[in-house]
Length: 43
Image (tube, rainbow, N blue to C red; front, side, top):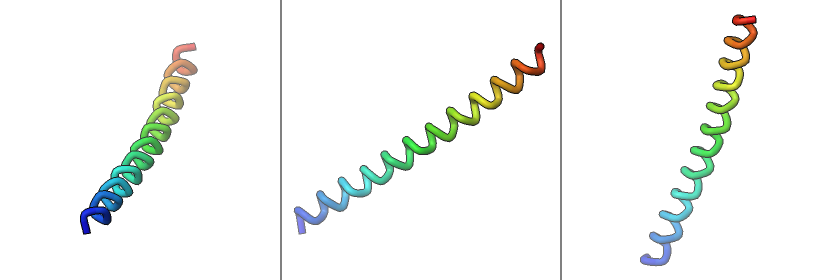
C-alpha cells in the first residue's frame, strides 16, 4: 500500500507538472501574439 501511494502521488505530480508546462507554453504563445499585434498597430 505504502509504495503504491508514493508512485500514485509521483505520477499525479508528474502529470500536473506536464500540464503546467503545456499551459505555460500556450500562454507564452498568446503573449507573443498580443505583443506582435500591438507592435504592428503602433507602426
